Amino acid sequence: MKEGNQSHVTEFILLSFSNLREFQVYLFMISLVIYLIALMGNSLLVLVSSVDPALQTPMYYFLRSLSLMDIGCTTAIIPKMLTNFLSKNQNISFGGCAAQMYFSCFFGALEYWILTTMAYDRHAAICDPFRYSVIMNRELCLQLALASWLSGIPVATVQTTMMFTLPFCGPNVINHFFCDSPPLLELVCTDTFAFEVYDAIETVIILMLPFGFITVSCILILVTILKMYSAKGRCKAFSTCLAHLIVVSLFFEAASLTYFRVKSSCTPESKKQLSLSYTLFTPMLNPLIYSLKNQEVKGALKRILLNKDIFPGSGKL
Image (cartoon, rainbow, N blue to C red; front, side, top):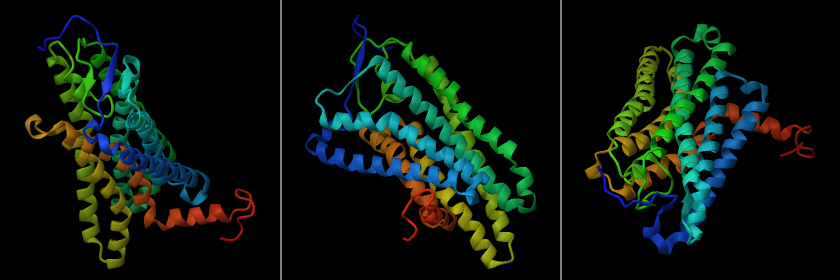
């Protein structure tokens, strides 16, 4: 049990990257550029996949959800971090901290399950292509997407409620760039065993179960690809899964290292870097990874740009 004074915390101070004080302006500029790229890339992917008739497939239906999630996650965290780079006042209110934690938990849980549904979609497309349209029908896609979005509500509600009903007696300095449960837990001045047990169970369910399902799907996909007689077919099947494998690897590796690393081997600065990778860099890379070598997306973007009804005067590129 931690000792604290008798005063109650009404606001917190986010240290962010204060150890790099002389580089704050440069960090602000770099982070702002990456944030804008992430917003524009994901917004463009949502627009293209929503407007073009050729992209009205389950894969792009889930990809739209992933892009919307990336927009929400970065917007919940990054603007405050950008403000702290240039401001001497790095305070965040008690309610603001709770809101930031709620939405980061909500969108984090959502991403795990969206990536899982996308893995299931790729598994059905490659392992059972003749029944794919029957398996991934419109009703099932809607149910999977809705379940993914709703999964974030109980996770965020329970975790945020449990955390912010615990007493914070001071100090109120959070050694992080946003209100996350591990650094906040260090400021609690009472026994946190119950929360830690819940957090461990939640992490296994929200992080490890999706990762296990995705791993099994990838193994089954790999086995199916290796059984294909055509080298061209193997290459095409593998290319359809490569982007998803890269995104899953980036996100789950950063998240698992953040929440499962042994405390003695993980410094606050390394936690910040890992958190930054999946709250800023991954949302920027996702639309690039899914679109860079995707001829369907490139073709859809070209058709939109050539459509005079959408962009008057853009008949020629």
